[in-house]
Length: 96
Figure 1 (cartoon, rainbow, N blue to C red):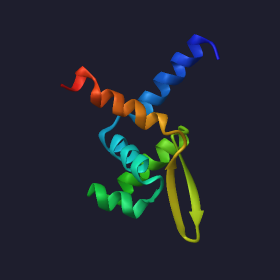
Figure 2: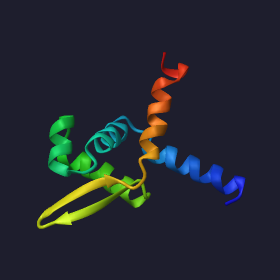
Figure 3: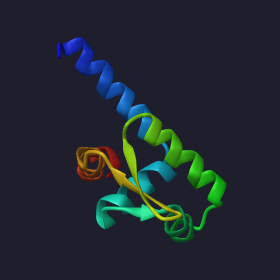
Figure 4: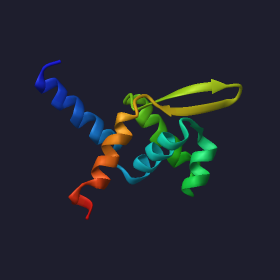
């Protein structure tokens, strides 16, 4: 992949996670490996429809994927590097 495509992909991923709830979801999934929608929205004290919207959006963009088990759908990070990028931002001088 050439530099221009890598830069475009990086911008795409950063835009896909650039929302406080999405960052929280990514952190939760990084800590727990996979979670269902109910667990996520209860832990974030947010509406189920709002969390579902963010989960679907991140899944459509390739950040998350799902595993089905009976009636339950479990979300997980496709690549934990996204969580590592967020962690780097937390550790940077930008937030201090």
